[in-house]
Length: 174
Image (cartoon, rainbow, N blue to C red; front, top):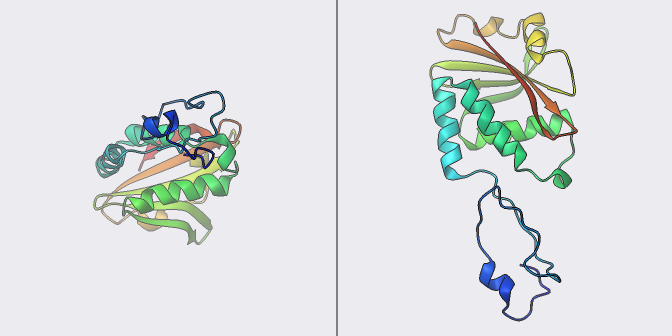
């Protein structure tokens, strides 16, 4: 609620939480209130945890797409490190065993996410036509995890800085 409202008015009556697809444009012509987006519900966190534990990469992609769609374009820079940091933060908040910038003998894996039965290896790119999945293969990022006895999922992600969104999601199981 804006500080420009010293008296109780329509803005006070309409204050509250709204669905994440709600488009706020002010309650009256002279309104200075602003909307703070609630981009992820408790239910979305549960869905992400379930999808991750089950290896449902399509559901993970859909939930991440929805999450990134809720981030206002004016509050974030559009570079690979910002997307990577947001991605890392989401899974960190879920309490997942996640490693960022994990060093190997031939480079750095952007993200390694481990569950009790699945290891995910993520490579994140920005505005690139080549697949991030190819880099995972070229640098054999998966070698150190081959004999862990867990399902191994390689995921190459590409973000569009123009759209502020996931533009490519390639998955391969080894």
